[in-house]
Length: 75
Length: 91
Image 1: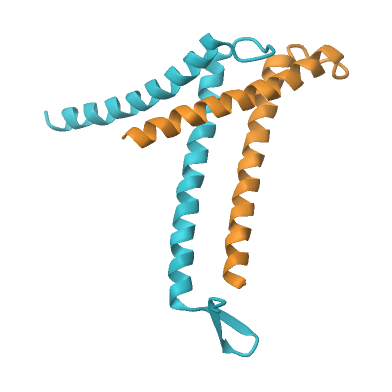
Image 2 (image 1 turned 90 degrees about the vertical axis):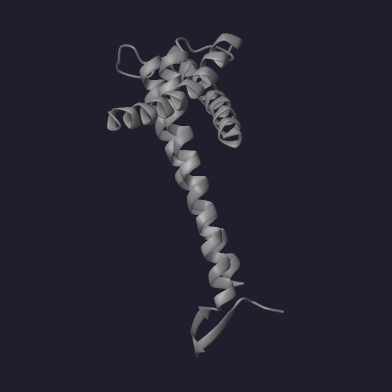
């Protein structure tokens, strides 16, 4: 079904773009928070921080998402 | 059983009018979803900087409240600006 295929492709491309944006933000924010002084490699402490930061950023994204959608539905 | 398209020429499929309308509506919906997602990215970026000072094992209640307030106050700011611009225009 051609129509279905087009719709699926559009959905997939948008989902990919959204994931890409999230990854870019996480990269930027977690580098800022965790790598205070760039050394010659990523220390294990820095790696732990980045892993936690990724989880926290996604938590924050979900909290913001609920707040925004909730507000939009009110107005 | 409608597959939603008919061939205008052999090997050159096109969409019938009903399918075109359906696709147009679908795309409109996806565009709206995309704009929503983009806003969420922008707010998360801004509010993360304002609210999350340290990286820990979970987001605590204070940080969560800050994030929610941040979104609400940003939208209030937006409304305030629009209202004030109108006031300035009407002077």
